[in-house]
Amino acid sequence: MYCVREVVENLYWIGGNDHRTHLFENIHPIPYGVSYNSYILLEEETCVFDAVDWSITRDYLDNIEHCLNGRKLDYFICNHLEPDHCSSMFELFVRYPECKVVATEKAFMMMHQFGYKIDGHEQIKVKEGDTLKIGTHTLTFVEAPMVHWPEVMVTLDLNNGVLFSADAFGSFIALDGKLWNDDVDYRRDWLDEARRYFCNIVGKYGPHVQLILGKAAGVLDKIKYICPLHGLIWRSDHMLLIDKYNHWSTYTPEEKGVLIVYASMYGGTENAAQCLASKICEKGVTNVTVCDVSNTHVSYLIAHAFKLSHIVFASVTYNLNIYPVMLNFLEEMKLLNMQNRICAIVENGTWVCKSGDLIEKFLNEELRGMTVLNERLSLASTLHKEKAVELDNLAQAIVDSMAEVSTDVGKPAA
Ligand code: FEO
Image (cartoon, rainbow, N blue to C red):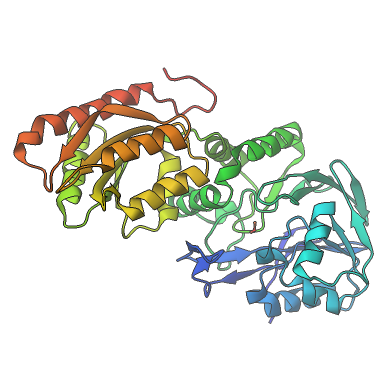
């Protein structure tokens, strides 16, 4: 049975939801599923915008067949060629051999790399600023390289103000019948997963996201609907989304607050992390998140790190090195270009304590814009009450340094 939703006159959502895949890109957990969005414009000519993941291809083809109702498909526009959107193209092209394919030059190159058979189709290469008429609609194409692959473009329909934004402004979480941003309590139920999606998928490419936001700013008055390839369609509150993207893509914290990530083998470092959290809260800063690095998927740690202004690394020494899972978190931060946070260190070692110096070295030499507080809490195996002053000093230094933080994009600290 088909399952489609009208977006605006003559434009329909024809995507689907996936609750079976456990790991997005085979790496990021998606406990609430994910949607793969595709759209069809039914005018004097017909046009599909992007395809879907192979996992929902059967439903997708049913949706297209229902919408076309015997008509032919004239155009297929590929904004993004990653297989979570394009693996079903193969079947689409078999069923609609006459459809013209519209994409950037790089996307066509990648279609050949992936082995999608497009040789029998008319291929229309487009670039920044090109336009295409579909019936009475004029589409304009805007290149958006590295948001999130190099071949990406976004498409703006100048007639109805629909922006087909590819991965940009998308989110984890399956739609499950919902369609619009105002169908849900976005801040309560979607923002965390939208942040985790952005930071882990596109986080590395902040400057490229800034570039596309700059282009969007020039035509903001023309954009009425934002239709991403994952998650909800935006018909209101665009500035909320743009504000979040501005924070994330400039590595500006959204909130003053502390992420304490601990690596603990037998509970000593865990106890120290909890004591520190308690002290910080006691001093009035209660926006504190504590995570065990060993049982929190790194994608969640990255999302917390993007959100908050401070990160405390509390780690045991392991084989004279940083605990491997903590090292993985640090490496992931480096990979995603994470920067501009105030950091503090809690170190532990039973025979020898090396983790603190090594973490500080990593933060200073491998990441950009990380400020490491001078105060450090060092323990041998467990936190003894003789360390109460050291603990208090570290908590106070963290609280005091909140004044150095600005959560305004582009504005210096007060
Ligand atoms: Fe949803 Fe970059 O693919």
